[in-house]
Image (cartoon, rainbow, N blue to C red; front, side):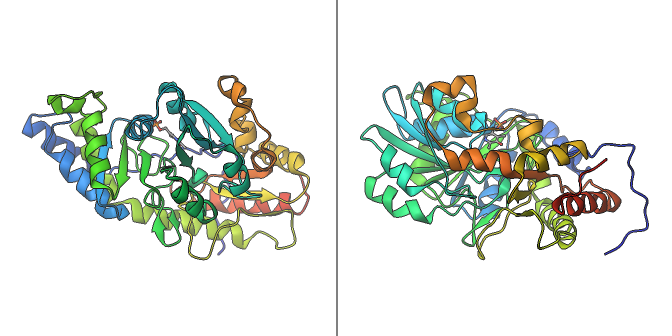
Length: 373
Ligand SMILES: *Cc1c(COP(=O)(O)O)cnc(C)c1O
């Protein structure tokens, strides 16, 4: 593919995606006309059914954030003071903070080399009689193949909570991310592939679990039993319902942009895509490349080109480098390597063809050891 459009070098690449209008106003107007704007609005069950159908789960429960989704899932598995939750050391703060909200103890587990999947040896070592749940994480929308730990956890009776906040539409072993564990937690914050501004949802195939999470997040439906108010407001559910229909087109455009960049990537260079299985598919929240050598130099070259990787832009590092999680530090060399060796590139549909071509050029140059001026 070629383009004759000049590169727009005056404007830095914006990694935020705000989808073009797709009829959300009509959907919101219907909620206004109905008069109920709360989480009791008629659109809520419609949105929940659409989410369950789209992602192939028996049940979906809409909530007001991804953080709420994770907290409610942890509470449903009786995570409380004195219990432990295993979480990948690669996790960003929002994945693990809800464990602290429960006054439980986060136990950081290393990943396999060049992978987002948990290392079974390290996991086994860290399982205790106090372990109540494991959080797994398809970070950047990349598939995490957790088959190596599935049997082990089933034998120990430990449930899996997937933090699929960045993984709408990611496929793992031909299933949707968020449907492989006992419960999948999603965010619909503005930076996610499906956005309602703030919001989130939970997916599960377990009806009893779904009822408990629904109960907890809706003040126990005021029928006795403790709960919190994590309901998603009607107008936000209306936005989600309308935008959900556009998710497939968005995924397809992200894949086209990725192809454009990967086609230009020399096979013998220092960068390759973060690996995943043949039955897997990233949703391309980001295109993630991994440097096989000279990691710091390559990260710096992308930074100078105006494409800062997460390690520079967000100071992304294993969780125990964050002050809040320093007390839980353990050696996680693979997570450490992944944080410094990965380059996250924007590939969202708002990037022009010229911008994608420019990113492809920059990437090809850097992978051959050329650094930008
Ligand atoms: C965004 C995000 C969350 C939190 O979601 P909010 O809706 O912002 O509360 C949790 N985990 C991951 C991996 C995220 O990207």
